[in-house]
Image 1: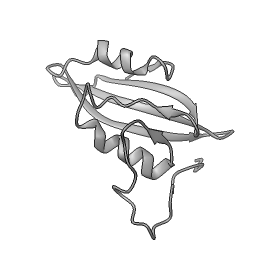
Image 2 (image 1 turned 120 degrees about the vertical axis):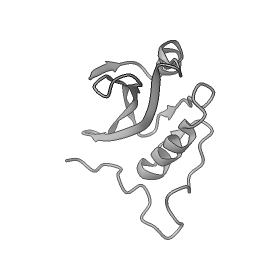
Image 3 (image 1 turned 90 degrees about the vertical axis):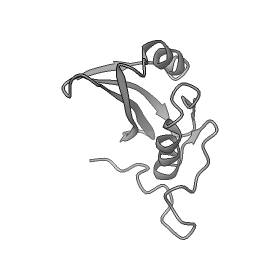
Length: 115
């Protein structure tokens, strides 16, 4: 597994230059709550030819930061982006909330959940 730290300003360009749909499978976007009102956002890819090669791009953000969308590069990312919005209460460009949680559900259930 290779984990690559990038900035929020650079994440779209980093993924755009890395991603080749013939070589890499986009798995998901994941969030990990950190200390001090911080969130680690991870864009996770696996190589088609091998199960052992995983690449994770990640950024550390404040919950108030706006996360850029990668839907123009990987259209299926909209589902992961909307899950991030629902579970952590962050804003992702062009990603509405309400995909996974009903109005009467606990909102942002993973925000601030530290292991």
